[in-house]
Length: 135
Image (cartoon, rainbow, N blue to C red; front, side, top):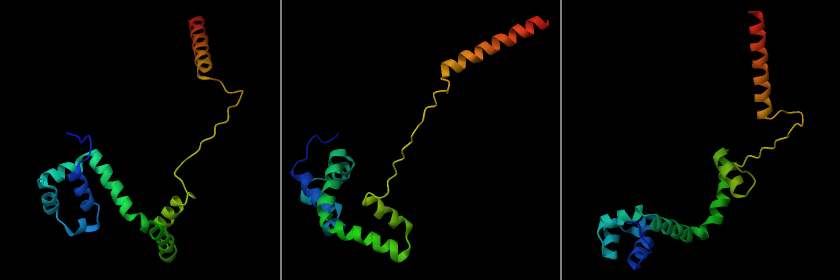
């Protein structure tokens, strides 16, 4: 069953799970601290609310390191000639997007699909008349 709200035991588990190497704890130890079974920890990890808050806590934990991380992307790209790092550095800085813009230009002389269908039907009718006269 999906969690509707997080309780103290959930936040305690999130605290440890969001730390590098789980703060030196195993899932069994985290479960014991929270007063639940190890299976409950695994079940929580599958819950969308728990998962969302765990990711948010990881971001909060690493926020202060992000400027250095972003700076290192450019350094790695330049030093190693790493195209993936260069692409990522450009995307983060808004200089490269996956967005594709398509511009369409409508020619006023272009036929629409209904007009094409009407012309095809008229052509078929003329062919049929020609075939009938030939017999």
